[in-house]
Amino acid sequence: MPHPSSAPTIDLPRLRTAFDGQVVAPGDSGYDQARQLFYGGWDRRPGAIIRPTDAAGVAQVVTMAADGGLELAVRSGGHSLAGHSTTEGGIVLDLSAMSNLDLDLEGGTAWAQTGLTAGAYTTATGAHGLVTGFGDTGSVGIGGITLGGGIGFLVRKLGLTIDSLLAAEVVTADGRVLQVDGEHHPDLFWALRGGGGNFGVATRFQFRLHPVDQIVGGMLLLPGSAEVIEGLVAAAEAAPEELSAIANIMVAPPMPFLPPSAHGKLIVMALLCYAGDPAAGERALAPFRALAEPLADMVQPMPYPGLFEPAEDIEVAEESARSMFLDRVDRAAAEAVVEHLQASTAPMAVAQLRVLGGAMARVPAEATAFAHRDRRFMAAVGAVYEHAADRPAHDAWAEAFAAALRGDGGPGVYVNFVSDEGPERVREAYPGPTWDRLAEVKRRYDPGNLFRRNQNIPPASGPA
Image (cartoon, rainbow, N blue to C red):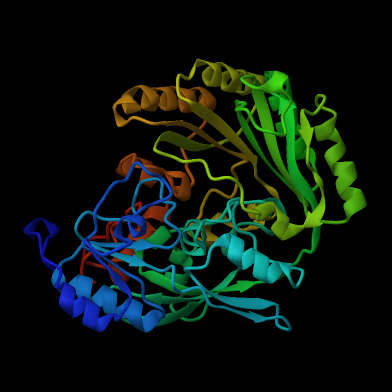
């Protein structure tokens, strides 16, 4: 395969013939919109954006990129923090036209094409009182979140997204379309569950559907203080496994549901989901409401898809973000959150804390490529701002903030929350023997590292 530095060119007439109506290229109307990502800091110009509708079309694109030495970026929802959903001059394989969903209600399973968003999938299954747990943002593509693991509103009750993954259809670097599960290509099935997009293009997933109809959930806004932060985390860890909590701590913007006196003050925006009996849910949520007089309380019984209702999108121009797993969130960590958020000079700065455990922790670490099953908490910190020239200062803030939270805790990071931070951080996502095992699977299925626009795991050395 020619090296990208040889600057291979894209034969657009051939592409347009092969993919009638599915190619967007420079100069076409809609090109600028088609190349945009969720995170606006990645201003790259692909040579072509191709939107196939099935695995056969994906295989054509993969083969064309491999034969032509073209850099290939695979996009599901376009939420890659590191900008991996696009390329400069290469091909973007955009899966957004692949959005079929086939439900087997009697069997309790779903086959979903990977261009679906988490919100679209959840709305469709929720109409039947059934769910698969994804993240917490409806516009995320199910391809990327699943391949990285999937941590969301049901993590304590149902585990990770990959814990509900039964099978996958995958296009490999040699253009084969493989049906993969625990009995067919089990090495690849293991790697897909947490190893990211390193091993092929996942075109369809088969998920287990779980009966979750009504939940008690929504947003609870509390005044921000170290005491409230520490208390909320403790309450979430002590709660029944039916409850999962995500705490976003920030300086309050002028939101219409907040009293004006709270604007510009530190607040805790808790996103809560109790997936169980409503009366038990109200009892489980009482300790959160007792932490302080709520500034706003939108927690109520609702259908589960209500958590994914479209929210007003925040325009993300530039972002400096860091994430990590933590083994404790004590008063010192809570005070560090308050201190660093108040010290930020960015227009928006946020810290997010998630309490893990429950069903996620009961899966053996070696069962999937996601090997952080025993970590109790996950934290993320980020600053959003307008000008790239301000990045060094905000990166330094994020690094110092992350170090203060981590303390003397060990390394570790969720691969879907890694930004453009270098290979050592990617290694942190795959501790112990996990990395070597993934590199060996990579050697078998992608020895030329065609799929490298990701948090990359280079193939192990040796014959494929």
